[in-house]
Length: 250
Image (cartoon, rainbow, N blue to C red; front, side, top):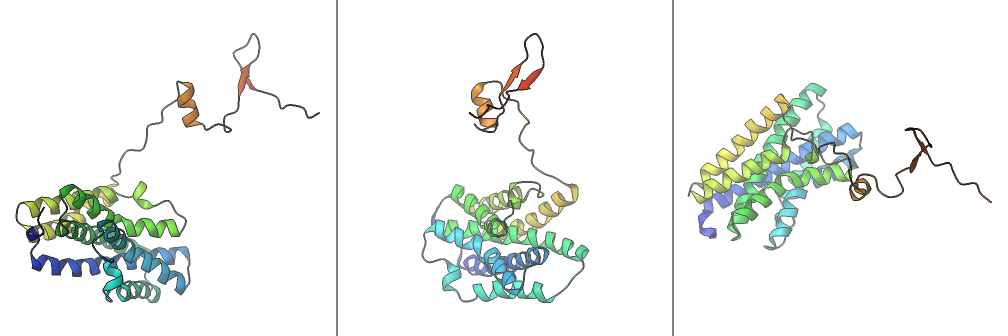
């Protein structure tokens, strides 16, 4: 994949989309910090991790120089500003809920598109572009949740969060390969907004794992690790199972 397929104009636009993603994700981090009841320092830490995390993961994986968040002085102030705005402005829970979904969709669009364009500009192919576009979109939120001791929302029950990121990245890559990178930027962001809002409103989620039952000793061990399974035995002449009695100490 040649970097020439990413025009200079798209490269410039990518920087602003990246900063828009930083601001949006920092706002999301601030909203989560408010829910957790953190102080101003907590707002700043969560906002910075949320706002810069995804992009830094992407840049480190690209190995294409120092992460841009450490070389472009606009990134850190943008993340700080996003967290401070949420700290200072009080909105109703209903308003925050609506705003959170919109910001979430915007982050997916901005960062998935940015991740794709930066990956292709670095000379990598379409598959790494989809992968890093997705990682860019979900990385900051996942780091934020880990820092706050929560299961990352991307792992389920979140309105197809990662699925939307993959769809946006795939759409952007397709448009670039068709020679329409500008269209890919517009379609990617619009797709993120429409797809994410629809998924949240209609409650779309991916299926959970099947509640399978172990039928072999190996399967039983995988389902119930050694030490967590209580051995049971049958009473003679009955079908009832009873746990082994505890051994008496000598």
